[in-house]
Image (cartoon, rainbow, N blue to C red; front, side):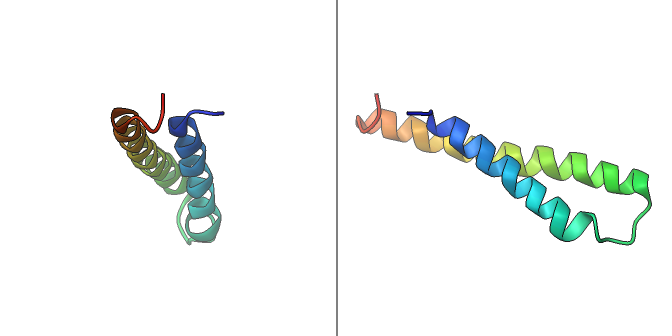
Length: 67
């Protein structure tokens, strides 16, 4: 079974791709600004979702649900 942190990381990465497709790509911005928006949103979204996964996994391990 994959670790919860890994699942949350890939979920965050997928959500970042969705944000790019739905809002950054169709936007009327210069290419350099789109690149900066893409990098910042990818790190921000993926990082926050991954950290939520780390926190959830920590508490589940502390409660004895996970080993």
